[in-house]
Image (cartoon, rainbow, N blue to C red; front, side):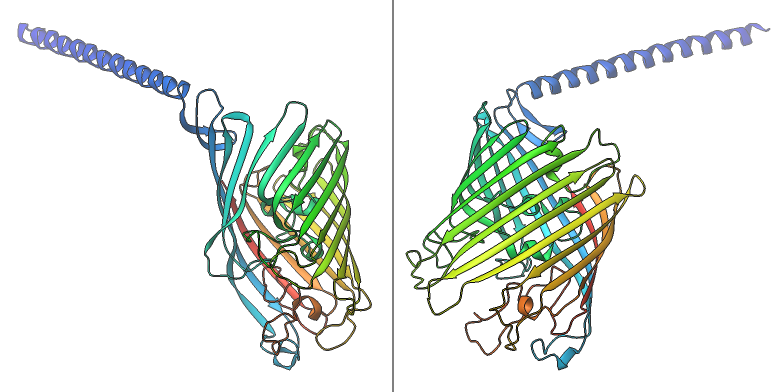
Length: 444
């Protein structure tokens, strides 16, 4: 090798060694920077801060006594309704034989956490409104749904106060996002108490829990304390016995994953009584209401079942009006055929008092509804994103439920579901109405 070639090789080796040394120095500097950044972040979380954990996105203090989690959900639906008679229907003259379209019946946003102490928890949740029980508009406005604070002692006792879904019926207590079908049963919609304002006491043990409350009455969310929709007073109570299962939390939804460690069974019952004699809001004459229910929820390894009995009695203050007693039943079940596909079915029924009459003056037939469908969970064992499709078939006329007397200027004479469409049904005088719904849900 010539002297010139030897010098070139030595020069190249020197430059390579220098470059490698500089690269190593840079890597060490970058590693030190990452380490310092990680240390600062650890210190930041130690002093409190923001982040993500198993319960979601949060901000909080280092000791955990003050936290705030941000959460929400949305359900987007495509609806199809098939009816008969159309414009020839005397009670529903404006309906078509086929109606379809998209809707967003549920869009929630809220915060929850604890303040001052881990035992003092709270939740504030609102919903962009759609037509539903107790809602007067469907313009997408944001309205308060829940706003409560709760303190739980170490001995199992607790107290909750504010606006809330009262613990009266199991089907009502399970949130919309964690139902088996797209909607709760129509029977529950009729006999459920909805959201109320008041105070609830509770005691939870390993195998049983009890609740009792003093409230403004059924469906009194966002009402004034002196409003005409309020009862003079209302009391509710519920008890539950956990026959099988390792935790109460597994009964927060109707679904039971294939990986469930054991069987679960909870049996419960509730009662609601409210009096409306006219002391609140200037209502001269109204109805005293009694609601009661018995229910059972069973969960196995990849399958589930639920059954409920409902009863409701009204006692008008006007002696000329008759007392009425109505009853209802719900039976439903689901089963996973794969880790991500769940099939379900439901029968629910309403048995009307013989003294009732629909808007045509006829004694109504008892109502029976059949619902069948399926869920596809994008991520196994998670409700965070899922597709649901179901069909609901009304075997009899729904005039008593959905009918409205347009000749009544105050729109007082109307069914409890008049003007609503979230169930998939619109109401018709003939039997055989069918609703088909497809839904995508996200929960965060």
